[in-house]
Image (cartoon, rainbow, N blue to C red; front, side):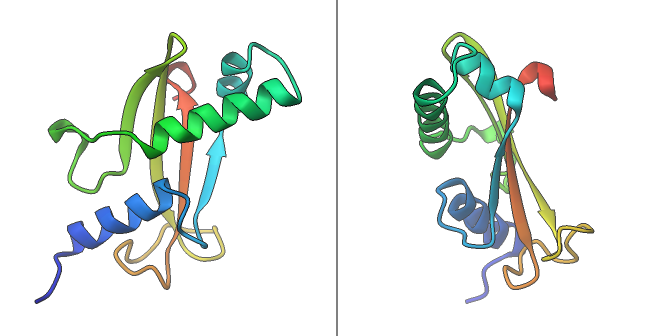
Length: 117
């Protein structure tokens, strides 16, 4: 049985979101991390990042989020947080020719505040 490309992409995106994609990258905007850590550094920043990534991992997709599960939005500490997965070639220079093929695609998950978008 052949899995449709959209479902393959969604599964690969889930792996990226869970931190299980060795080729994937997770980026958090400076503004997002600063707001959630209360402008604190050190341990406050580490705890904020851990809480943020846990929220991304446990995100429950809704029908309007799209079939590829590449975008989500939720509230955390009174802030509207968005995440988006983009698809690049392995050198991160150009868009991927085939996001359903993990061998030629590097996923970049960006977590940001709504105002950063």
